[in-house]
Amino acid sequence: MPTITAEARAKINLWLAVGEKRPDGYHDIESVMQSVSLCDLVSVTRNPDRGEKKIAVHMSDPSLPTDRRNIVWKCAEAFFEARGIEEYDVFVAVEKHIPSSAGLAGGSADGAATLELLNRLFHGDLPTEDLCRIGAKVGADIPFCLAGGTQICRGKGEILEPVGLSSAAPRPLDSCAAVIVKPEGVSVSTAEAYRKLDEKPPSRSERAQRERFPALLSELRAGEIPKTLYNDFERTAPDESLRAKAALCSLGAISALMSGSGPSVYGLFRNFSEAEAARKALEAEGLGAWAVRFR
Image 1 (cartoon, one colour):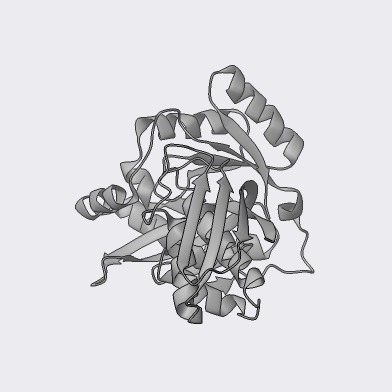
Image 2: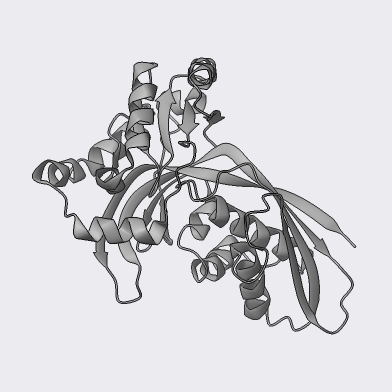
């Protein structure tokens, strides 16, 4: 009964502009996503086939479902259907460290890691592009979580384009670190966040800020720690998120932003030691936080 394990890394959004709602219920987005070192651990065990279709899921967080509602289950089912595999018996265990409903793609990261591990256990010949196509049917962030790094994401999030970081430019991003804060007791439903966004069009200043997307790409391609950050969801952000963002700025963050639909926020620092000092200061104030590196 072979068991293999992989890291499922969280993401932050350096940019997130939300367009119109599509006929399929998703919204078109223009985003830059960045994978970070905060991660869950996903393990998959392949048991001997007994002529049936069996998926079992265990989550270290007992509040999360372990049946067909779980994104890990959905990804496993989608994988076997895409491969035409009729007999299987797998056990997926997820050790959670990424907070749920936090705008950090924790569930999508778990689903992406599950696809990677199943691909290794069952012949291992599907390229990442095919895994992305399978994952996109389950969740919009799964293709990015499979690819990782720094990516421009369009469509519903499944159309990926590397930012194209220059190897010749100075690389402050190599040493850049972030502090992520997830306000205690605050969770955000992504569907509800999009509904609120549809009801609150961007202001004139927000529309002008959206035009600065090329400036962010220029900063990244020049190897700079980006200051030009933007997220449409900040106009519906919980007060706790805005207070945490202000706290990060007061502790010396070069820039700060809410990630995804929230409520998590992050601040960018020049190096990990500065980020760790900020994390400890936030911890002293009763705010749980993580100091993370870019991956």
